[in-house]
Length: 198
Ligand SMILES: [Mg+2]
Picture 1 (cartoon, rainbow, N blue to C red):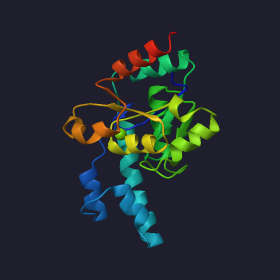
Picture 2: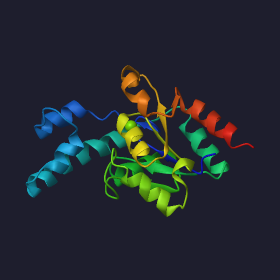
Picture 3: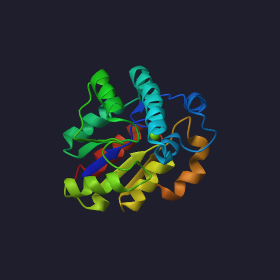
Picture 4: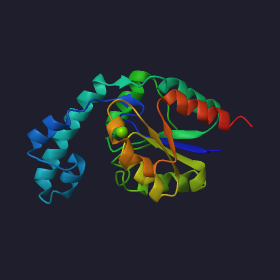
């Protein structure tokens, strides 16, 4: 059914535990999304400083991140099923490299915020559809946040929401954007395994 699976990183494959409130404090940001606030900064020098602070926190989190239960098995299944798979993240490329190295993970693609407009932009998903010459409805975008689902929907791909302890209170807001809802990566793996067996 699906020829390409685009996985979110933080909260989906690994648990970063990025201290968003501490970062906001360090950056002097009261509200809004940190990355968007940085990207909107017009003073280039200030923007570079803010980005540097964000990256320091992200890399520290990447070095301490934990693999989500069943992530490894999911990636192995995707490899076995020859489903093109990889990461689309709002995080930096270096963070993905640290995670891949630490947990010995291999991806067919990695699109970080250096490569395309960050989700909720559909740009990274569209790039993948074009690059790997798949149809949008053969593409599954997997994530644990609204931005993952919106990016997928705007690219006319199918979307899968992974529900966990920290996002379960936002479920009602996310639901309208999710074609599928899974409560673990194991559930997602079973879904992909079953659908591709025929
Ligand atoms: Mg996430």
